[in-house]
Length: 230
Ligand code: ADP
Picture 1 (cartoon, protein in one colour):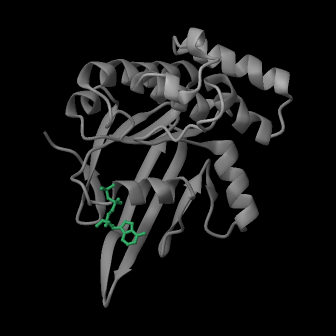
Picture 2: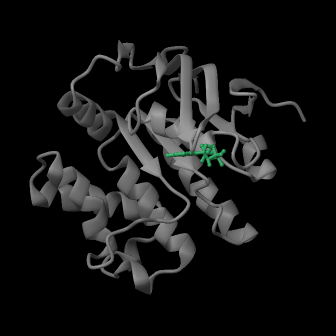
Picture 3: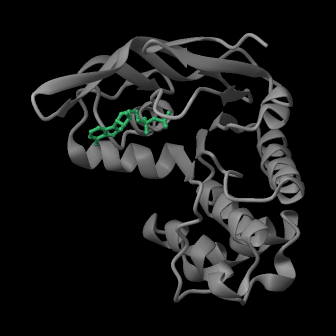
């Protein structure tokens, strides 16, 4: 349940891209808050700026102006090294395509971010195993991504995203590549994990049924975040 503490805040965020000789203004001062334990859906047409917003929120890109706060701390003035550390510790990403490392097993894919953070191999393996069990893919742990179904691959990607217990999970069309039934259970897995660990999540999705199952639905309208009606 949302406890009221804000874990992610975007304040007056602008982002524009240059296209030849004209400028494409994508975000025009967007404001957004995500509270502890809250799951928010971001539903907007293709090209509206959902990925851009997630990249800014996850410190993968910098806004042209405005500020991103994670756990109350402004991120705009952080050095690149500190931004990387914040991203690694506080943010988990899930994309439409799993982006798992093909030459490693499911278990290893979930261990790697933990080992990069400095956890010993045995501890990383234990947590990875627990996460895969929780997501009901324990028996597939030793398989490489190519040997897994689309739904299994996305559950491994979710386990990897939460392996370092981030504050915020950012998901960009996490079920966009899956059939409706598989979408449903991958979303259920994501939601159960988020609820169980008190994780906050911002999920861009085209799937209105899934969006309705989250705490709140927002959209992007003319470069601003607005409540989603309908
Ligand atoms: P969505 O995720 O809602 O589909 P995006 O954030 O991916 O929207 O893109 C919003 C707009 O910004 C699109 O028109 C896209 O072509 C443009 N865009 C995104 N990234 C870049 C970039 N790096 N350079 C130029 N244009 C970009």
